[in-house]
Length: 330
Ligand code: SF4
View (cartoon, rainbow, N blue to C red):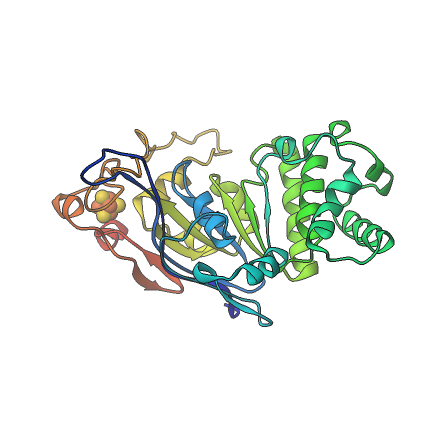
């Protein structure tokens, strides 16, 4: 792995709820004790069901969600920021270096602005260009990279399809020349036929501009074709991380296995999904004791209900948090 651009240690994000006047107030533990290193230039996948905390984790790295505990360092070789204690003027600079691509291209774009103005807005807000000519030049340059027809810069978003709108969102995120991008379910709202097109675009831009991506998705099949490393999250915790090939070839955590078995098979003789996930992810306000997956795990034993498993190092950059992974692998 290259030098990490993002390193977190024991990162937690909690949201206090209003509760009774006396006694303990309820807290949503959206992210709990997450430690990761995202190498420069990598396409790092973060997967899990809705409610697993992956979006909150991505937003915490952009300082758009509060960091309750733990450390998070951004280091692109030029600047190094301690994200939990980042100062106001550093945050202004960090916003140029770290950007978000939204999930929903329909909601993310103002219907009253032209495509040119949508893409140019971050440059103007951050004061990154000195003249309208320079802004237009940057907008045209990034629009071309994102395969947006330059004729379309004068039009409004409603004139475009979902895929075209997502390319406009991507251009807007990239126009400040960031180093680190959080792409949150960036293809989930698109037709399957368009998803591959947008994924190929993200991949080629990443290689062309040397960017680092945190690619958040609920869909392991999407991650398989784009990411070089994958982390699986459940109820705010990392339960397994590995290079993508290794994770798909040798999944060790029962939750990862269940997610993989949910990928539709093209084989007509496939007998279905023996590891199908039952039930809902528990509430992060009141998580179960011990292993957080125990309420849905067919392999749970007493130990799982009492003690939370720690991430074990399996070698080859592969970590898993399960008391029984060795037995289950055998
Ligand atoms: Fe299942 Fe126990 Fe492993 Fe948790 S620790 S995933 S409950 S076997």
